[in-house]
Image (tube, rainbow, N blue to C red; front, side):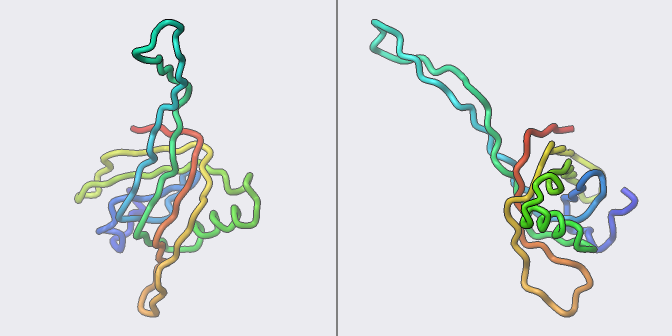
Length: 144
């Protein structure tokens, strides 16, 4: 990965928005997957009811303790804050690396947009933009 900067050596997760790497993070919480069911009570059967699967719902994904070299990830959130959902809806790719910088796993989120942003305490001795937490929702994801 050519643009994986040495400043990010302790960060194991990178975030690409529409294919462009924007930030690196130390923590990534995957979405919670839940199967919703519909309960069907069968006439004459009093000992149990059938639970049929209806749909799978996926919760939000959260990245924590991040660093970026510019404000593009924050601008992505600002699109949502301005109410421009079309501009904020993007393809998000989160890549997990091992200690030798080899990609271990890649999550590709479709039609994702941010719903929460938390900034860190600002310090004058740093040249990077810190990100405490960013949470986003999506319309499904693939793992490779």
